[in-house]
Amino acid sequence: MDILIVKWVHIISSTILFGTGIGSAFYMFMANRREAAYKGGDQLQKRANLAAICFATRHVVIADWIFTTPAIITQFITGVTLIYLLDYDFSTPWIMAALLLYFFSGMCWLPVVWIQIKMRNMAALAFKTGADLPDTYWRYDRWWISLGALAFPAVVLIFWLMVAKPYY
Image (cartoon, rainbow, N blue to C red; front, side, top):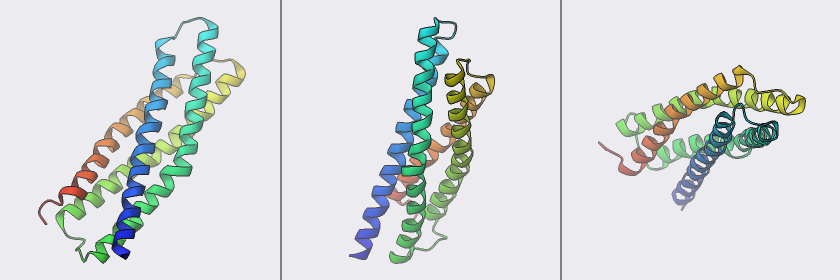
């Protein structure tokens, strides 16, 4: 019964992690693309776009603290617990690969958290002062997209490894 509970928590936390990640990324990406598409537009439209960016960036940061961070921690704890409870060896190739991908995606995520906070702050300041988003915001956006494009397939591969358990 303990194994089933740990496995269930592992699956639920992976669902929360993946769902929050892809959902947050979608809304922030779309808000930023809307602004980029209307550059040079009328002031009312620019203000509405900036409001959407403020909303998206603020809530993506909140979602990371409420959902993503606890899910990342839970994933590691339940994953290691399952390795012990199921009597797997850490040197099993699919487990080593999953752990490497987990830490790789984490190394992508950590700067993303910092970038999102910076983007949120820049968007809030631009909205408050009526200024345009600075070029730094768009440079951070490119880094945010690049790091997400690296982390996303890593997480998908972890799902595959968990299901297929190749070479076991």
